Structure formats: structure tokens, C-alpha cells
Image (cartoon, rainbow, N blue to C red; front, top):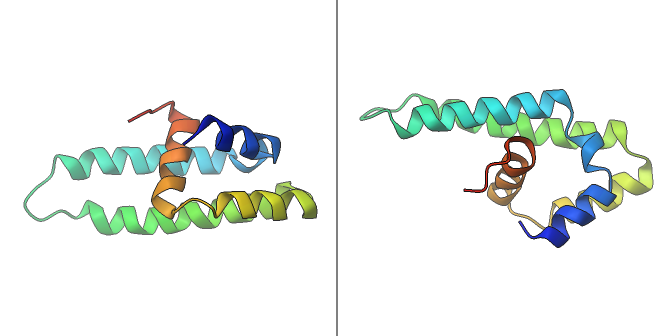
Amino acid sequence: MSDKQRTVLELLGLSRVVTPQVRHLVQKHQILEELADNYEPINPFYPMMDGLEDELQHAVAADAFTNLSDGEHQAFRKEWHKMRPDQQLKFLRQYVLGDHS
């Protein structure tokens, strides 16, 4: 995530999109990912992570719609969708947890 992208998203209302619910989902995903990394041979955590990623995407979209004006929402959505879903998740993890891995 570039500093430019982060700045643009912050200007477009990122702090109003990353609500306590989104923060909780990011933290929950981080915990599941750590469990999945250390669990073999049959890993029950991957399906849980997939569902959580879907829930997180929905939460970000819903919070952006709810907490931003129409113009802010459109601009935020346009900038947000410039990233692939895996990049969005990595960005949220960095933003919420300060994780730079």
C-alpha cells in the first residue's frame, strides 16, 4: 500500500469506514490466519477465513455507504476498487493492526 493511496483513502473518509465492526473483523481474520498457518494437515480455518473475508468486504461497503456522503462514497469506492481484494485486506490489516508484513 503506497502512502499516496492511504492518503487519498483517508481524505475520502477512511476513518469513518473503518468502524469498530471492521476493526473487529480484521483482528478476527488475523487470528484465524495465524491459526491456519500453524495447523495441518487438514485445515478447518481456511473456509472460516473465506467467510470472514466476504463479511469484511460487505462491512466495508456498508459502512462506506452509511457513513459517507454520496460524493464521498462514490470517490471512496472508486479508489478502493483500484486494489485487488487481497490488497484491500492487506491494507486494512496495516491500517487497523499496524502490520507491515
